[in-house]
Length: 327
Ligand SMILES: N#Cc1c(N)n[nH]c1N1CCCC1
Image 1 (cartoon, protein in one colour):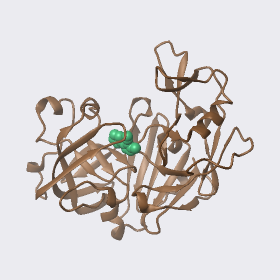
Image 2 (image 1 turned 45 degrees about the horizontal axis):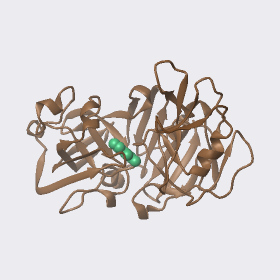
Image 3 (image 1 turned 90 degrees about the vertical axis):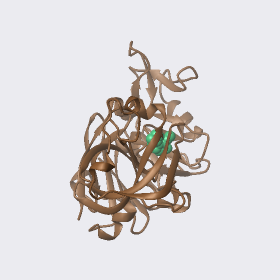
Image 4 (image 1 turned 180 degrees about the vertical axis):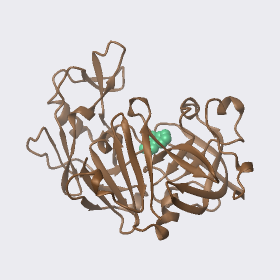
């Protein structure tokens, strides 16, 4: 059946956590449409590493089975990572249930995960071809659930500083306004990748040629990382915006009024609210603020939580497409 869980932004909307029940044990996890491993803090880790965290205890699960000889090792674009061994167990997310789901048990996690005590790990929702388990690659929860879901979809409803929803198997049309604009997804990269070739600022004339012109929908990335041409075009309309090498990106006066950004999603222009592009102050004085839109020099562009706060997104694993609508 379908399943729906509330998600909660961590402080500053840095990441969005939601409850996942593994072998009867409910833990909060980071739902990540930009990766494809489900890994958890667990009782194999040292007490120091586990301090403050919830942990999955396979010994307490009557349905856990080790996958002998299987290991995983994942590293993310921000330099963080985890590695360990693997088993299977029953996973239930708001009622959507998979038996025999690969559960990757970290025996090593990088510092940023240790300090993020509210998160018990990640649930990857990109395509299974990116899964890192060896010698036999494993499937994501969504892949395993596809055949039994009423509809082959999951949806992300992320909000600024407020609870939202992750749903599997149904599209709740009360969560967005107007029709969903659907775009085909190119699964070659293993990401939810689509064409994004134009942008406009504050309702102005659209640009027409963003180099590379590809983007991925990635709930596991906090910001929105776009081509330099988009970043330059946008911040040229923001008084006092500067590229601040010290803090590592574009900043502007916190008092600035930020225009909306219109961005191409497979031929339909989606709007990112200017308010959501004012991400956070860079210091205690609250004078200078850090932009939620920043540049990436690599392709594809990464449309993270900043994009999702203005747009409800449906991920269709039946026909590999993305549906987007304002919310
Ligand atoms: N970097 C990065 C990244 C990404 N592009 N999607 N998810 C990511 N992470 C999940 C946990 C840490 C980073």
